[in-house]
Image 1 (cartoon, rainbow over the protein chains, first blue to last red):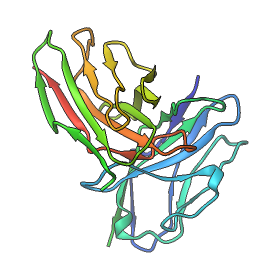
Image 2: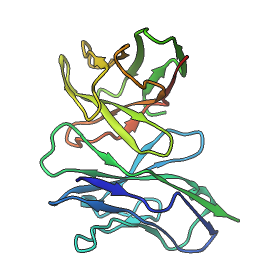
Image 3: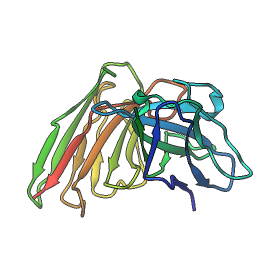
Length: 111
Length: 113
């Protein structure tokens, strides 16, 4: 079954500490993976996608096909990183934007 | 602010009534989407539309209907056939070539009384 799992409902770190939000997926193929973010009182927005191999706001995510993971990482967390983060999978060849979302992880960065 | 508006912000409905949620965008995006979000769960796709006058069912389309008569508008009707309609509904759009939702609206919270 196609599934995205974010094992941590809440992740709390101190400012300046490294942060890693975990995302594991179940899919028999080569999916496309995404991270979405929702800051307090703001809308959900696309943060990054694995095929872009880019760093957005200091965050990076590497697709590990062997471990079927797509963890989101940042070496030094900032208070403004506090938000809800969702990992999502797009099945290969899917047309029309179908995404399978994880349950979300709330990141809290304390001063 | 993203260019996608949803109305109303809160909506209450009696059992057995149909209700329509509005979604408008001024981003000139072809693709639009409707998602449902329940507590403790991720988003689930209800319907999507890649072009005017065309739309496709998502994972949980039963009990919902949509129309796409204009590029900027993609209203969602929650019918009385939807067994558990109380939820948070999000509309989204994306530019050509992306194929996944990029910009989201603020959402509508529907409560069935």
